[in-house]
Length: 320
Image (cartoon, rainbow, N blue to C red; front, side, top):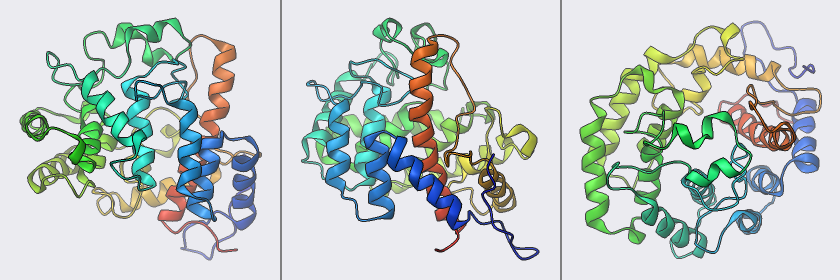
């Protein structure tokens, strides 16, 4: 890893130096996908939301859903719940209105993909097997709804999306989803993992969602997050519940409870920056080596953007 932090006065947290920030910026502008480049420019410079939408167009299908490797670990061209949810997350970030065709089309596609017998959505379709993908997106793992806690993934964040643009959603259907989700919350335990907590946090932060839904979800996040968080920096290079995953910004539900852990995790993240300015994935695929190399580069762009967002949110980027 490249030196990336300046010397801080004793007792003060590390900062991502301005030089290290410039390296990250250079990576994003020169080597990241147009999508992450557009998101970075909108976040940090004078970029526009329209440029993000232009970049998202490359991943959109005529059916209104999204695919084409938008989530780099799934190279499926056709629409998937995984990719469409990912696209809607970005559209929310840039404040896209409900009447934008990418929003209304994406919501309509998700409504059509809902499986009443499961009470949720399958993240990937059977045809995922016909295209390069990470092991965790194998269809065999998702045929019965997935290895993930069905009550949460992908339902919790999709529920957030539907409330954000609830004018596009039948009211009775949305109310039934809320009722089912509330009924399932009590059965969750710490085995649900960090991705599930992140999905629940998206729902907690959705102001358009009913207060009772947000409050009940926040309570479960508080109860489960402390039990699953990894407090050992030596483990953070693996696939564990890192503090920053559970509390990526000061307004997160777990931010106060995990303040000390988050501070140490921020120090650790600063030191993980690679010499080229990027942050690297800590996983790899079990097959498709050529496709993985492309996906790995795309993940570098995504992870670099996410690292900068977290560091800025927590005040850890040195001013120019």
